[in-house]
Length: 108
Image (tube, rainbow, N blue to C red):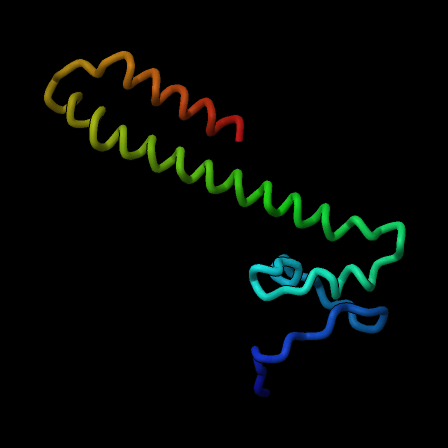
């Protein structure tokens, strides 16, 4: 059975209950959100926009979280660990920054 990535699958209909992937809705990923908007009832017209808004928020939060994790890891690896290994005291500013990043990560 050969599959072709060049022709997208048709949108779901009453007889085709294929799940809609998020990339089917993301225009920047080759999806066509308008194709799915046309299938919705008029009362549900805003549903696609809500899904895309939540997806953008989720991706933004994940980007922020990964950035904070990376900064925290770099601070621990390149500043805190070497100072502790050398028996030096870690400055309160450094520890406060780490604490702030951890608190921000917990809120995301």
